[in-house]
Length: 316
Ligand SMILES: Cc1cc2nc3c(=O)[nH]c(=O)nc-3n(C[C@H](O)[C@H](O)[C@H](O)COP(=O)(O)OP(=O)(O)OC[C@H]3O[C@@H](n4cnc5c(N)ncnc54)[C@H](O)[C@@H]3O)c2cc1C
Image (cartoon, rainbow, N blue to C red; front, side, top):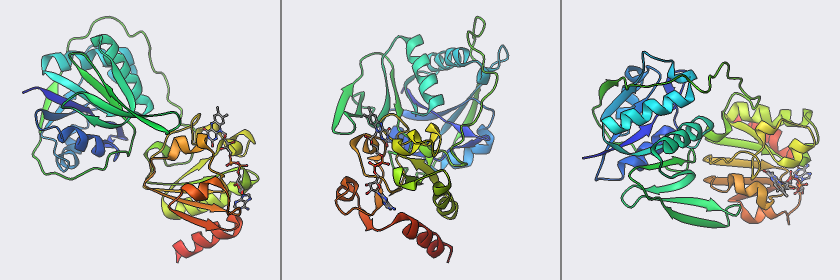
């Protein structure tokens, strides 16, 4: 029986929560076994949590020839070697910056197509679901080839617990050549301590925030909620906050459980980036603002009154 490999992304050697939904997606295909693929020597630390989502095998990939975590092309080479040796025919990962990079390099080396930013996947017939035209259309794409490789938008697939007992297997594939690219330093963008693409809750501000100072009330509320702070393009273009906080067609695509849009009109380009949020709350003074027609809960009111009141209520 061939395997589906799930690329596990870690932060400070801890598996990110957003991996668990893609493990669930991989486990939903009964015809293949599912294994977790890890690169950073953290399999033992993450064994228990991965078992909780049904992982029965963790493959820890390393190399004595090169530091794979600073050499993206050699990392892809090592992954391809592992897939070929261990009969891993399906590969799924997060459509995060790191996931996109590795999945694409891997597909290129295997000379097969790949699909990124998918919102659904079916391993049995090698199809994926992707959102197109700012979320107005959903396409089902079939990928042809001996290997099936896709990246899933973080948080779009609900994680389901499923008990399992995982064995850890160390694999050191042969790699050749020198790294074409070497990562020397990773600088974190200034979008707060919570990564928007992984956040369970996001509170975003639009043009109505008026200034950088105005965004402080969102940061205060976010702190209480454990949320990330996002922004519309109008707020970014006005220089209130950096582009790393922008949500939308030309910003980040997010799928939190709760999205609170404050002083955001709800343009189609903004919706393209947060449409798959589970619950959308909008705070707007204009009862005719488009976002109020598309949200789950609308509050017609001044955000400068509503947000601090919400923060106080949450603190209480
Ligand atoms: C190619 C292209 C790509 C784009 N990409 C993106 C993108 O990635 N992300 C994105 O966001 N936009 C994007 N846009 C821009 C998009 O079309 C909108 O212009 C933008 O989203 C508007 O931002 P806004 O809602 O903050 O501002 P506005 O449309 O000006 O809305 C402000 C809202 O605040 C409300 N308001 C005012 N004062 C208050 C108050 N005190 N309390 C509560 N509510 C108040 C108003 O009623 C209004 O609804 C893109 C546009 C194009 C053409």
